[in-house]
Length: 133
Image (cartoon, rainbow, N blue to C red; front, side, top):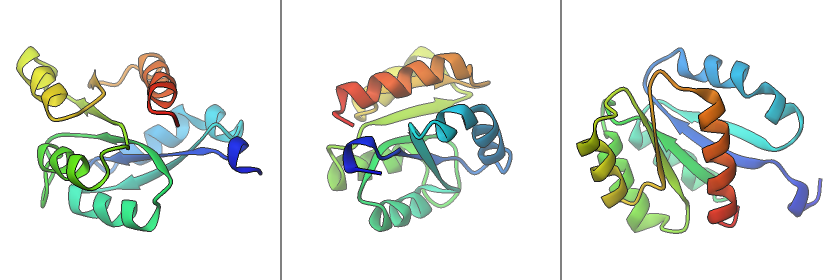
């Protein structure tokens, strides 16, 4: 695959064990079509390690409530270390205050749990266009 046609890497950060199989199942068409490759981390700290090992990640999707390093702390670290990588929050706490705080923390988008994968697909595609991914 050439660089221009390579699957775009998306890092999903969530401590819930069912998130990875759910993303793999719900996004399998996009993965098979070569649009995206999903990487997974169970905490903000783990996400930073994955980003160090994968500098070509094009989008980070993070939960907020996680052990070790929460989503807010991860968004702060992304802003400092990877300011060109767009981020998106997926959280059960989709109130206006969290949406506002996510935007102020540099998050490009916000999707409330339970995840509507039609909405998520659209936001992922749009973030790749806006972020130049």
